[in-house]
Image (cartoon, rainbow, N blue to C red; front, side):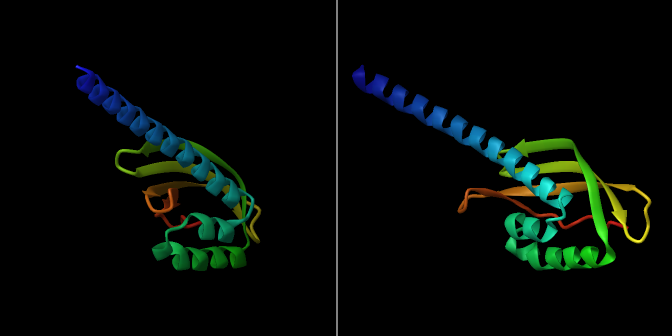
Length: 136
């Protein structure tokens, strides 16, 4: 009887640990996506790329960032339209809208930016799999 209670107790502990792990992943997803989008908003595009882009996409992202900087991109605001975290799949996505100006124009434009995120087991961090949208 005691053995059965011990096994049941161990099972409950494992279940609680799994739930706590998923909760932590969801919280980290929220922190990462907010920080990334804020970096874009405050013209820290290169830093955002170095921090959140997967190694495979980082070079292309940084080239995009340099070209946009040269074009005079100024992001004035952003709004997260939707955010979905799927911890069991280790994936998430965000749809955000960015208001921006491309110099020398003074016309305010808005673009929708879909971001695909993946959870990296080794580092315990969320990384962005998407490149920048075509700010035009």
